[in-house]
Length: 416
Image 1 (spheres, helix red, strand yellow):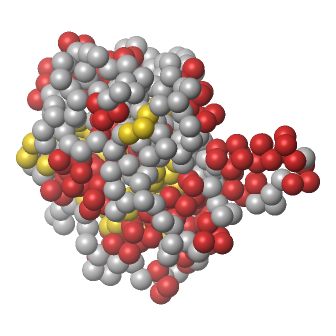
Image 2 (tube, one colour):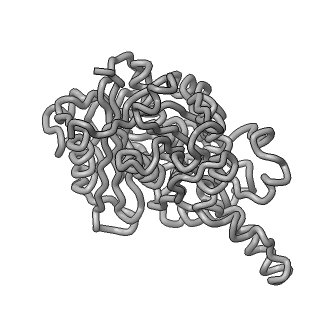
Image 3 (spheres, helix red, strand yellow):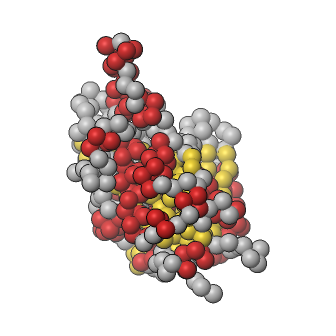
């Protein structure tokens, strides 16, 4: 459409296993640094999986008052902390904006699992009268969006998306469409997860989804590698400021990239396994490309979901081959999860941030630990070392338990 609104990225913020700022995150993943280690949050010595991607040296103050932080689950703290960086970096003078013109959509796959576990223990040992009055507000997944809105006074569209590991991507896509519709001119969006807890670890371990490479944590996440044995659960948040183009230009914002499309599908196949032929993932990519007004020949880079599971990586590679045919071998791919692990509901957001920075800096981040590439995953996965390459148009894939597929499309911003 000739007069259709355009959506650009003007701010980024993160808390993740390799750094608590976007600059630290980017420097680490360009160098191929791993953020995976032994679990320290609780005693995991009896678990078959004892490793995760934990946040290091996290102090919510001064972003979050200590008293308020005690009433919030970690996933809300991470989201609010990352939002502060994204909003500051965007330069948005939000106090002089129409508060109803700024919305918040933040996804989470699990939400307040830590609050849930602690409250359940209190209930079982001390009785119902000792359950905290802040239990419900700490647990429910919409509270990350709620806390951001309350902290800044944003009164635009506000809700959460929950679609397992596609939650963050669905939040970003929903925010993109909200701006296109004119529901808001600015959306604070992304995903957050504080999922490293005993029951989360037990659940994922017992369905054999997690890597058991406990003696070499930094080598446990191995997308595309024939010896991959499962993903590594991680925690953190990625928050993005999306903005309508004219609004951004009028205030002189620095534009990092332009978001041009989002594609959503379902596998309708299995509760945890992807469709083996990747048919849902393929259509999601095709829809995102079509929405962007681009062709398959325009795609320079794909930030793959590839979580380092035998079935998941192979299905995504199959989907890419289905979409691009022989050209699939010419497209640069990488999996950020090889370094930071799998942030579940926040994965799509932090990987979207990596894709924005790939376009901005012209650097394809590596897929580390790809030492013996699986013949079933024989595409250009940028093994082990970053590569300089101009990227004008890119995709970011996210797929979740339940068969949820989301692909986000980004391009280098041009005023033409």
